[in-house]
Length: 103
Image (cartoon, rainbow, N blue to C red; front, side):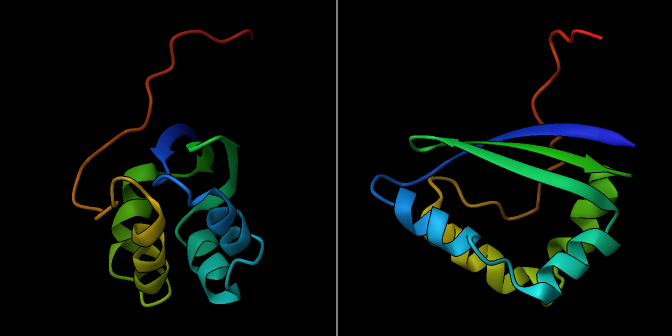
């Protein structure tokens, strides 16, 4: 199991839109995310900054599974309207590196 931290940023003025869109995740998308190995996904927002913590079996495998998934493609198109930098699933990012942890 991996725990991956991510940081994304909203376009100016899109905070309420982001919150509204995330109030209800499409059931098919949730199913696809879970089938891709995600056990939990939390998002915190501070102004325009979004901080994600993803508990996933294999982060890179999850990204490959969702890249062209028919439930994820329209969701990512919607997110692209709100985010400062679109996630096109082309990279091999590993998230934000952990610096310190209180065990």
